[in-house]
Image (cartoon, rainbow, N blue to C red; front, top):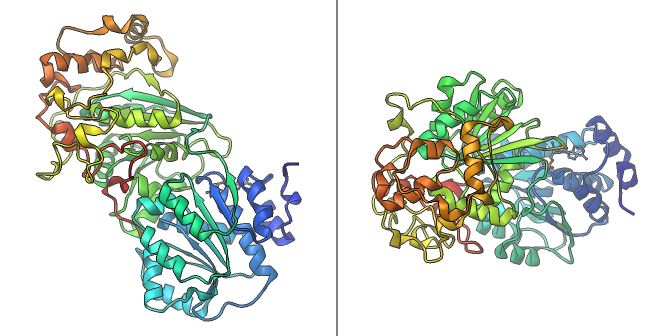
Length: 543
Ligand code: AMP
């Protein structure tokens, strides 16, 4: 019989009381499945992402275990260690410890980068019941003997796949090596790449396995829409979409830190609802301020990179906007999961330019869904001087322009196995052999709809075209702005291949050879499906 209420879980009254205070009425699936086993001391392998309630799933049993055996922690020792990849997640977990442990007398603290060492050292010196840490700073504290992990009774490795992505896996292994052999261990990961599966095997003893909302299934409550739009028009499209009053609270994702700053700068000029930015180059206090303003509703838009936004838990996000498509399809699922939380409905808008087609293909392959194409609204013309500002920074010389920018060569031949966001102005022979001929991607495969369900002339034109056989869709004319406005630049793309390369861009400015390649951040070629992951966004680990 499945567990429906917290009362059915064997949780002590102070925890039940805290759950009532938090107004939780029923356990989430991961809580219902994991808590009974964790209370019995079992190890656990949890396939779950943020938003599933996994923090309570591990925090509640930890609190109960520690309080049922109330030994004060020794100086410089900790009884439970929760390792998490980002500072934001660390702070959120600490908040959960405070929420669920409010009627217990257990101590917890956070050890993370970006803030001073001294207060952390002082707290650790007294010993703490629960330590929440990011790997880099914890390693320092262990190396400098400010903390000893030899008394850890429960160890949680949170977001293990992100640890791998962010280059923390070696630190994680070292930290695990300094834990005592006798302990309870939990590993949570949204995806299970080979390295994490191996790590799980060595870390966990006969774990129970709990899997909720596999990453390959995007939330059904999220309305996903796609805009085909060339890069120089993305800022104008964003500004236009933000005029929609239904946008209550939005996260806009950028693949790069520089891009995030640029989006904030451009949007900030026209948008009056307040714009915040978080990314790895911002100081911890700037990031916290930005998040607080966003949470409190002082700013309605948060521009973020994947890593900085990872696990951000803000209620009431109505829209997720993928200004850039992520180069790792799993990130798309994580991104759009920021909306439609706790039963709410959400909207995810994705902008796809010519250099991002392979990313789109990877996303649709992973989610096994085609994203609905939305017609572009009418956009104002590019303001004088705007073109220069919208252009991405120049790519450093000699950075793999020929091989699609893949640092480790995994995206050879201009953009990966699926036919990439290769430089569209370049010689066609650089396209991968099995790139799908565009004409074969019948427009009819994707429904095209006008914004807000309106039937516009543009849209009717599109619908008509969608019902035509693909073979009729080859325009023998230069690409025009309307091709993009109609939400379908494939005509423009085909025109390019017919010798109109300079007209590829939405604003019909000549595209310098290699520009679309150059816009892709370093090491950001699309990942070959099943191939090695790269750490996203050229971002550095936060901790
Ligand atoms: P997490 O996946 O742990 O980041 O949790 C996502 C959000 O769900 C957080 O805001 C939690 O406070 C909330 N939450 C966790 N468990 C429950 C529950 N049983 N009922 C309602 N909200 C919950």
